[in-house]
Length: 330
Ligand SMILES: Nc1ncnc2c1ncn2[C@@H]1O[C@H](COP(=O)(O)OP(=O)(O)OP(=O)(O)O)[C@@H](O)[C@H]1O
Ligand SMILES: [Mg+2]
Image 1: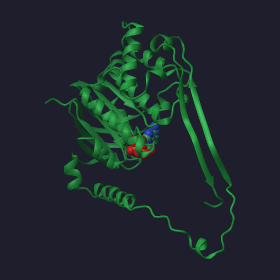
Image 2: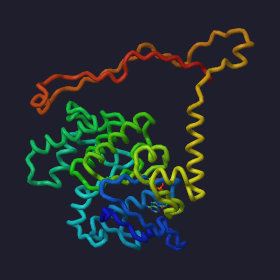
Image 3: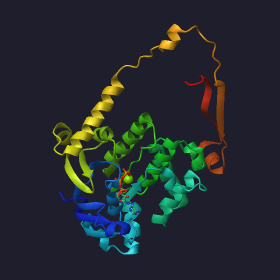
Image 4: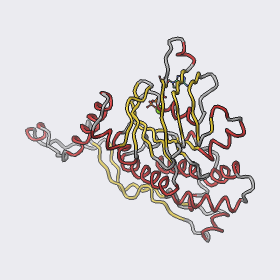
């Protein structure tokens, strides 16, 4: 089978580091098959994002690049600006760690979707673009009733799902997701990665998932590449690498992940503090007290929604009857 992405002996140096002959990416060779999900892991600063950006030709001109990258057999450093514009978005899409780097605060979610489609497919009608957008948003669990809202009206997890929907809109062959869930809590992160990998599977889209979370990569990818100091030090199937890690860095990464799991699986026990047992009970007043807090948002229906959803306003119960006491020093 021909590889979808083929990176050969890639080296990248940022200008200010050139003098010290420091390669942020050093002699990296990597392939990705159609439909394959590859996890790229490694410590902070080892060159993961640089490699991901190089694969989309998103590095600034001042950066020194050596080696070759082909996508579907086409040499990406040889693409002219119009070919490059089609390549980014239609062939390869990028999901960033912070979705606000992709979202415009002054545009509704619906407009983001329609603009993305029309920029690449100018002949498509607005209603077709809307239809496709609603389907894609629903695929990432963003209900169509949110169409006319702005990014600030979404939670962090929902913004990231919108960013994923925008990446999926043009049916790219490869998605490069650079730490897409690092800023989210574990439960939401796992839901979002679950959705992303399921959609990739259904559409036979390849995924390059950049992460420092070995457990996530092990759960959602087929293959893993471990990067250290700009180099790929180990690559193989998840099973191979996890059961028989070869490189010292992979072993330490694995140990750290195991340690975290052991700590997490210890049942939580709340012991009364010594002072609480021996001292006479003091009547402490909470420093912060929240009583039956409610925050409900109403989604006003606009013209499009009236057409699409027969004009029903919707209530979102963001906070619904929360009680909380916080005592001094606790
Ligand atoms: N625009 C830039 N200009 C100069 N140096 C850069 C630039 N971007 C990255 N670097 C350097 O390249 C090296 C690799 O950075 P990179 O962002 O690829 O790391 P990373 O593996 O993605 O780290 P993290 O997990 O923290 O995101 C680092 O030494 C970094 O300082
Ligand atoms: Mg990075």
